[in-house]
Length: 348
Image (tube, rainbow, N blue to C red; front, side):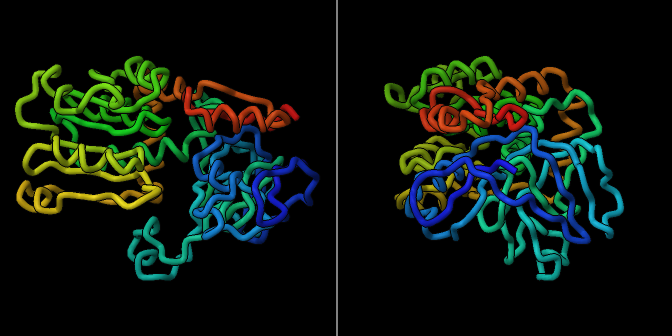
């Protein structure tokens, strides 16, 4: 099969022939149709310090995907050949305290598809049946199915706290931040503001329903609050950027008792006014991945019940590139000029 391959500890990938993966008794083999390019994949491609600390090459990366089941192991019970599926990328142990308590997203032995085991930048991928999400809604296109993983990040983050009637600040208008706008609107938020420095992404944010898209290279969040007619600060914050200045500015603009969900991974230390966190009684919650599998149920239910949300999330995919032109796809994703970039593995 054709696959993007990192042969050793250096920057770059190669599109090469690799052996097709063989499913074990409890595994499912999937013919990959589409894959999303994630920030994680950009780190792995560039072989930066984060990647060097977590990746062991050789490796086939890629963890956001949609495809068709072509083979199942002898112990697989529910997933069938021909099912159209996406995959939960976190493979858990099932026996640690959190797994046994039903908190599988907190498994201390998590192994990630495309990070610690071969992933989906290939014509075929194998994952456990327990990680397969079958799409029963025919309106889920291959492009939409490819971004269920990051959509799940947006849903997990956005639904961490009640949103009905609340004023929401999202920092970072990357694909996940953009999807969080649509989720927050679906869940009943009152006012939604989002920050970034990319004009195309801020334009996308407005199209997805943001009341205010703030270019923080020219405007401060406090000034934007006045434009929204707010007097007491934001009720809910979603930090999606990882930028060292985003969280401190968010904290400065939260109402007393405000709640912040943090998904963005910082690349450097962040200086926080912890006295303000205490005296303003703020709640900070770290988010990683998706709740398994309540987030997946919520995603499918929201998409099937809300055509506006369905259209909005679909619109986050701005570029679909033949997998044979993967370098172009990675350049687009790294530019940060648009939304989600998807590779089409039916076009090699």
